Image (cartoon, helix red, strand yellow):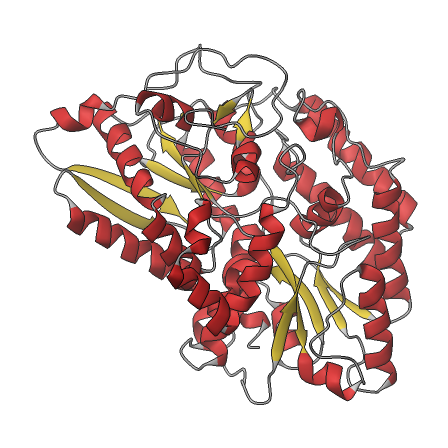
Length: 496
């Protein structure tokens, strides 16, 4: 069945297309370093309207089931994330007899998973749980196949006070929390400490802003260590992180949070212009390598692994995979980097280097949605499993083994988590990332956009045009503004 008409919604979307590169980037970061109260669920800004009537969460259906209920989970996570999720599903299955969770890694990339999901919506041939990219919040609402987590929170009297208000605010629309679980991620600056030493830079004091990246790049280049010290894949999520971290909206109406976005907000924004001018200057002065976005490409990671670059900004969610690679327990061929040597690599990580200050980003990472087109007992079983995923022990395991930051805040303060933060390379990096996520402004966690895929294409192409075609920052921003405006105007004319 579909969500009833009374379920909170906005407009129906166009068929989503184009690259959403976050999940693939998270899994492949290893190669780079081959180198509130109970039941509220909001925790942040809403559209300024009262939540509409919610569809029911059929909790009683699981108790009434006469045989084990199977819940299929679709996801596209790889490497340590995939392994850890499978282990948690096995633990849950062994802990009770009513539900059997089956993880299905149904796509190699986030883009492929999104295509599979949108293609399956018309026929309702969908899983019980869909693990979506963080950009898909509005898409999941408008698909009319997602059961709001708020329905189950209310029906189960589930206490949301232990959870991150920032994370809840990101996945809240019109006062309704949609994601039933989340695995927050952030982005960090990864750098070659040996290159810093050889250039006379402090290897334990990485750049904290874009200006400091430029200074470090100039010194590394002048020392003859690397010709183009900074490598950057033009993935849009990083552009968004820089803008959101500077409180620069991508679309109007408070980044789509106070009301549906109707136009882009890139032009006339000093921070957007400063960001694009920084990239233009770095590129023109031969201080960076620009890597175009393409499914399966890992050029920025190989540049770091082969010591052809000294710095890269990438997702924190690959930290445990990075450590596994450096420790020899991750096969490079498993992430498309066969033959890459670990010899001589000494990598560190620092806070996300902002336009103006360090550590200011936006929400990232996958979110888990219950699919309402499944039978009631499957919906109820899905909620039961996601409560397990939200438990402190599960959150600790996702942190220490899969590099995902805690949604349940207490997971970061457990003895196991503290030991992980203090004793491991990945742990030290993730401590930084966790600090970043928990300091995101809940009222400005990142944009809420219906045609998010088209928006990301526009942002990606704008930066690529500056780096590859020599387009001026002003012209590139104007082009992206127009493309996003067109996407917003067209939104609602297609649908699933």
